[in-house]
Image (cartoon, rainbow, N blue to C red; front, top):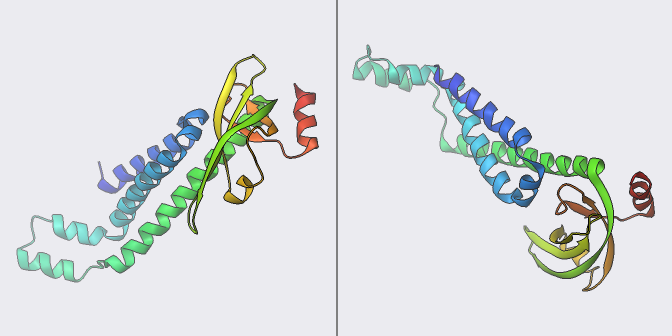
Length: 201
């Protein structure tokens, strides 16, 4: 099989797997790992495809057994060979584009899950932690609530550092959770939203 075609198929398989074959509950619970691993894998795949397409003449010259060493060197010298100054920015653009795609996909999956299987519950803030810097924000609340089936659930809910200061221990909050995967939830912020799910269920 052609080297470039092989990497096109591999990259397509990675995109399909990351975007359509990972269940929403696993995607949500392992978001950072999936985004990092997926973005790296997609970056490698796309770079391999681009190098196969753009450096076709260079690869052919290197692999041609009929050329002498001098002819091979001359052929390589006459083909485009990008420097690290070009390759690194291209790889970074591909990486961040892939990471953004995977994060958007997770947000969309959670939104669809809650639209389809959402239920209303009263949650209590049990705990929380916040760490933020200029580039990173790792703030979350630990929420506890009972599902419609009577099961007790304790789960982390990500918020921004700015939002974190608006919450306190033992505060009660209306939440919309998935009846299939209760760890997937969001805080209901408007009465309209609460009424919508109360009417539906």
